[in-house]
Image (cartoon, protein in one colour):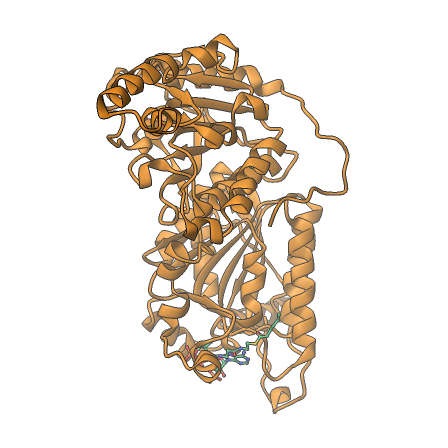
Length: 508
Ligand code: HXC
């Protein structure tokens, strides 16, 4: 037995070396950790159970029969994050550039199947060169089966992708179908076709970073939900994110002990809204002063900054926050903001995470660029997402709630459960000046000013909506945390089901 165990240890040691010390050193020289080092940081110490360490490819083409490396370019298994089960796969760039072969795919499929069967989240760490070029259709078939499982898992278990090196060709579409994608700055890039193909087909000259680096995907394409400076930061933040997420769609939002009194008042919020209604203020201040311990995990912080989305906790339990940001474009809803928030709302609804919405929105952004870009369809995504959501929905209107955007932002009419307004709220079809210029076209400046004042006094308050019951209560800004926390506590037993359907037809 002693010899057999020694041989096992020897085999394990060889497998753990992946593509060998030279390639490990090259990986480190590029500022990247190896697949196993990454998993050590991601998972609780000693919790990783590795599977299929000895799997090898079966290819005999292009001299591959002479090159077999145990593990075949991906490290798979499960472990825990702060004690909670999570399935993982990490591409090993030191083995054939982490490229996907038939057997490499089978390792991932096994982990996906286990994650779905055991209803636990799955995290993929990407650092790879796409399909194993020596294999052809066997690799393509492998990708197809990974994609199929991504779709079956969608809405059942959280799926997270962290891009830590190259991610090209077939590798991009699996992350694209997961719930969140994060990247490491300056070391990772994602594209369907690389700079060489781009040059050949479109004659554009771009670097990998310009084509698909973290900056592009967090600010322009919105493919990525966030980016971090290095592997360690990224992995630590993934651990933090996991603490906010439920294990599956039946488990409910996780709860952690909180030391922050849910009844806490914050008098500084009484002066958050400037006297001048056109002056901006930072809605993130309200979020940070509302959530437990000021702990907020923002999603897509650098894209469509006119809306803020992210996770926080109230009384220890995860809540999704959506808030118009008056600091950027006056908090207007445009196509990008609508898409960003719609996807976030749908994630929360899939996984039974209550949604808190802070509203200060002057309407939808006018203009040809927006209309030609499909504002109607994109705005409808957010409307659709809020309307179909059956999770608890608590809304607070802090200032403006104008026009269609009033309806969209989790209003009472879209089954908002508890809808509050601050005394500073202005709920109307549009702003006073615009309204008066239309109704009293041709009036002189003095007349316009007088009518504007009249319109403001009459409409720009929360009380008309409150008189109709569209606002359940006008609350003091300082008591926002208390009121929201109490509303969420009351809504814990909420049961609401939409009519049966195969699936809906959200405008895409
Ligand atoms: C086999 C690969 C590989 C691949 C890299 N390697 N990609 N082996 N199949 N796809 C190997 C290299 O031969 C090399 O082996 C080692 O991995 C490291 O690669 P380098 O090129 O030395 O590293 P680097 O300079 O960092 O460049 C990384 C890279 C580049 C940008 C990813 O390797 C590259 O462009 N690879 C090909 C990318 C690609 O076109 N993939 C196919 C996409 S098509 P040695 O032995 O020298 O260390 C696709 C279709 C699927 O994926 C569609 C499904 C929907």
